[in-house]
Image (tube, rainbow, N blue to C red; front, side, top):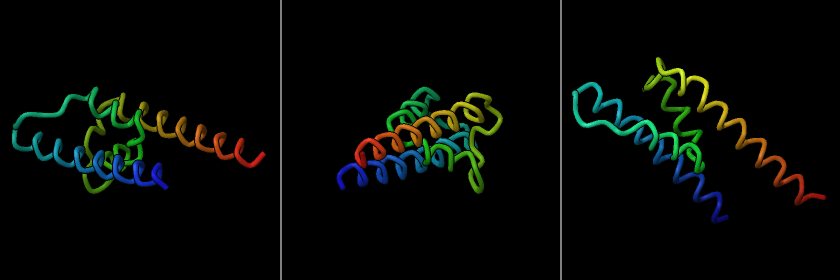
Length: 90
């Protein structure tokens, strides 16, 4: 259950930070480094980052690394979770 809480919290945080970075971009304020967003995605926040690239935020959609990289991370994480639970069942 603790892992589930972690996943929910990191994805909510990731989505919030994508929204906050979008607002900073509109106002020419200080921005978040892209590597930090990728680190969040790598450590479990890939769903939140991916959702931040979709409607209504549409943040970082022109960046190739976000259009291709985040879905690759997300698919990799789904595969890892699938194999983890598959091993538990055997």
